[in-house]
Image (cartoon, rainbow, N blue to C red; front, side, top):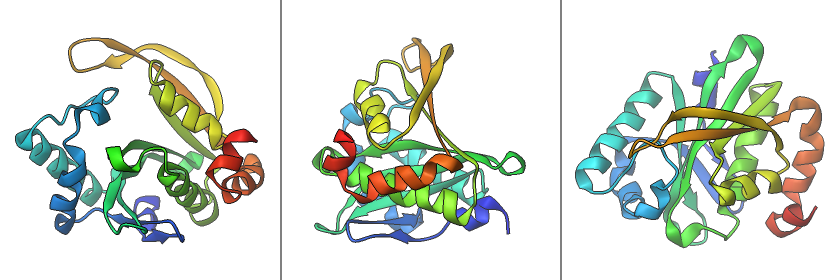
Length: 201
């Protein structure tokens, strides 16, 4: 079974549940996705319903084709859709992949949802897929995302300048982070201690 097939699994802990994207998720995701602040550092902009339909259809198609494993995140306390994350960049021969396309609705930021969702995905990457390396990248200007990656134990590796175009024509400098298999036990212990403790570790 390939990584893209193994990746599409239901992942769950006491805080969040991540499920592979499906048509039935369309309206639940829409309810939180139409917030322009989410897309400030994304390579796509979801500004209205037409944008959203194209965005959701693209996610469904990428997931169905095995190019990405797209997850819908639900917050267990409220039962609501909180956002989405993906596994992508499958380099199975080299045991390497990326966690990316991560976003949360306004009501779910700063509440530990990102922490617990990434904890599940990292456990899946290292303990089920048996990855050697998990990568992350973000806009050099996205200080919130960079802080979040440091807080979960990812190591900043460097900046690739003028990496890609952004909506509006700006050229993004992309900052890369990673966690290696040998580092996973320590990172897992930090993650299991909870968001506040991991951030101060």
